[in-house]
Image 1: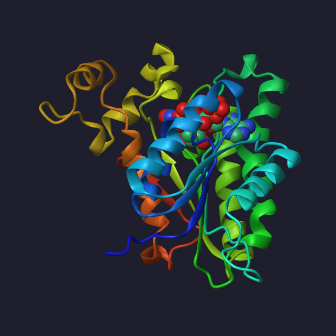
Image 2: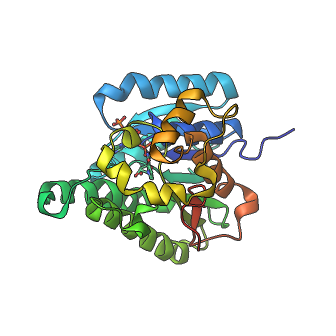
Length: 283
Ligand code: NDP
């Protein structure tokens, strides 16, 4: 049976670890060839092993490309790297990027008096300018038949007003606004949607202070799918959930929503912020 994304080319930014690596795996399992982007030299081995493991397990071509998406040169290098690794199949054919997942992102929590201009600029550079530069550089190479798929990783923080996230939440609100504009500007090329995870397992969530977790406890308690289940969730997850009020998402649960939006069946959905938070936000 042909897999749904067989032969397509996808770029996942920030795919060396965390949610990005899980998204790459979801797409690879459906037959998608992949550019595994990352930025730190210390993540080179990690990104190479993600690419190698996906290639081996799913029989796709996956290659790591190091580039800082938050600079024009980095975004250009990412697209050039994709083109170099995945040249058009025949002479005269176009180089095409079918799927872009703007996943790379950073979070620096601070109360208003502690917010620095440096943190503001760096967070907006990576989380807002980054996706814009990537989509801008990729635009000439998008499909011309509406079959393309762009998914942006937002966060519930764009809408919840979590304490200490004036900067991070602002970047994600900006990303959602760009999602709607791109849905119109790129209508003949690709659908453009965002997903908005709440807490997700991994270092970003683990870095949250007890005060932050205490502050969002009410939100967690009101999230239907965050209730941990004994005998279903691992024991340590159930134990932690007893303290915080609920469990974070597994990365593959967020990846599943992204993968769904990348499929052919999602072709009539564009300009949306799609729930990837277990029901923390309901519209
Ligand atoms: P991680 O911190 O685990 O991974 C971040 C990834 O982004 C890494 O691959 C990192 O590369 C890459 N990256 C960072 N800066 C750049 C850059 N300038 N250029 C290219 N790549 C870069 O993040 P998560 O998996 O936790 O989060 C992924 C996305 O999901 C983010 O956009 C985040 O805001 C969003 N999100 C996360 C939530 C959570 O609880 N974790 C909740 C809601 C949203 P390297 O390894 O080289 O550093």
